[in-house]
Image (cartoon, rainbow, N blue to C red):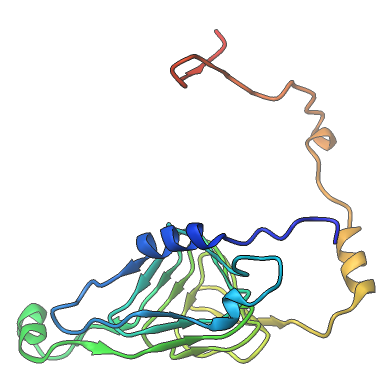
Length: 201
């Protein structure tokens, strides 16, 4: 394997969970976060997942997170919704009746990219799903499907492992700044003894 696996240590995962797990409506209901035991079962790794501490995991309902998942920066995964019914103030309706909640099952090898929203209506994200950055998922996808957009829709599937297809994708031409004639030195401000950047004049 030419590159190291970038998964979290147990300590890093604990910090991320402490920051990401939220209980926004604990006066109505307080769920929890459940990590599949397989998260901790890969030889040579403390864990096999990535969870950004800048994600938001709404644990009004409970969330199951499977192994090999990647939950990106500023993702928001919601397990509750409000009752938008009637003409009286919605806050009064909520005080009288509570709110909607359900648990959410996230399977193995699910990648939810930066800024994506998973709304209350989604009950299961099965194994292998990829959700594009900034997408809003409102319904359950199928296994190994790729979804993106607002609202998110299926745009592809993850097929069987294919070394030739991977090589072809990696060898596609790439845009480089030199293609536009950029030949400047990289911008790297000096850092003073107090840790502050010193910008060139």
